[in-house]
Image (cartoon, rainbow, N blue to C red; front, top):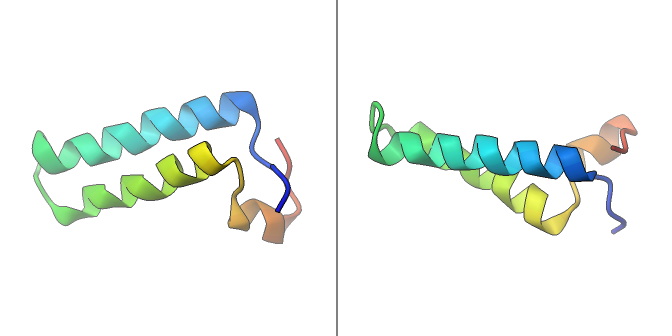
Length: 58
């Protein structure tokens, strides 16, 4: 499993992930905010399965 998520992409994924998780506590407080775990996980691992399927490397 080689890294296919670049530096700027990682930063954006962390920001989006934290923003979505914050919605669970501050915003409309729906469980949909927990989807923010996915971009956080892919940012910390450095690998995105969707990118692999689409042949994208950043």
